[in-house]
Picture 1 (cartoon, helix red, strand yellow):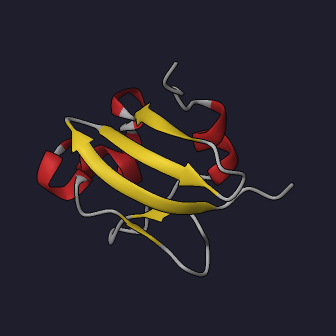
Picture 2: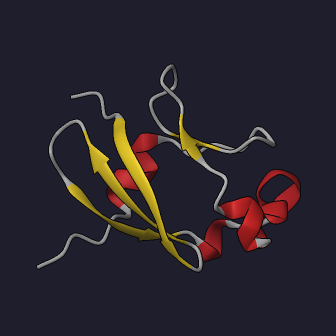
Length: 81
């Protein structure tokens, strides 16, 4: 199955709640991913919060061009018990 992010909400710090097309939903903390030229600027929480779900890419994206593969997000999701 090809994974797509269907919904995303900012929770706190660098944590986002996600729902995928396979029905799985949960939280992901991206604090450790914010390194380098593209992701480093997202350490500013105001910038981090500005993500959206791109309807074409079907994943979360930021205005600076940063995005994360849905597969990566799905693999690292913390699913509530």
